[in-house]
Image 1: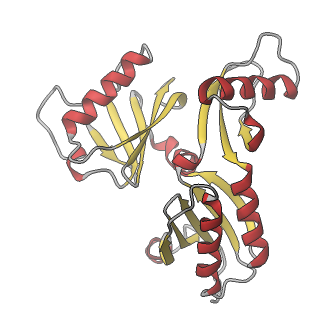
Image 2: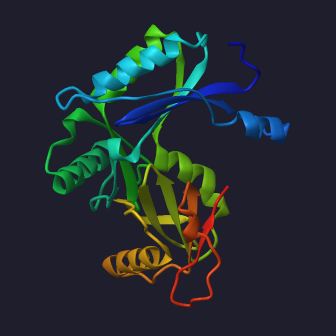
Amino acid sequence: MRRAIGQSLRIDIAPHAVSVQLASRWSLGRRAASAAEGSVLAAQTIAPSADHPFDAIANALRALLGELDVKGWPVSFLLADELTRMWRVTPPPGAARMADLEAAAGLRFQSLYGEPPTTWQLSADWSATQSFFTAAVPRILLAALGKVAQDCKLTIVAIEPRFVHAWNRSRRGLKAGAWFGHVHDNLLTLAATETGGKQLRAIRAMPIPHGADQHWLTQTLQREALLLDMEAPALLQVHGNAPANWTQPTSSAAHIPCTQLT
């Protein structure tokens, strides 16, 4: 397949499905770019083994990429939030070295998830002066994706959780007093924000129950605000395929409004 200037592959990885999409980094020719951006070239559902869940992902990717003439293409991998872990870390007093911050992140990981972080690759916006968020990806998954890219002659330019990708694209559009939500595959990854909507306070992923409406959404946001000892948001701005009834106009002052980010 011939690659136009600025085009790349975006491969979406979920526990039960993978898809290969076309992406473009150019804003010129918006209609053409919009039509191409995110268009699915190939997709496949998978049935992962409980013992070796990432083998099925790698095999499905090889099958899909083997049908596409994409040798030499750059590729970005987006990982479903349920395949990754994200948490907030407070740097220890007097932290002066990267090793101190990494140790603090590792201890917090073990406290939250009940296992050592040795089998996970950690990355963060490390800071010795303020709290920061850390993301972790299984090392075995990273190795599998690297081997697939090598076998298929692809150049990896990024591997990131879906939430991180959506947050980086959308945060400049957040309004003061709004929280951010990312919706994908009936999962809501909710980000409570502060400092005018630009600073993350907490991240939490939760399943969206069948029939979840504005009442459910409002109750969820209010509950999370209470748990965080924060004011409930004035607005939720959502990236992804939010349920249509969340963004419908409402005359009820009891509901927290929700708008769709593009």
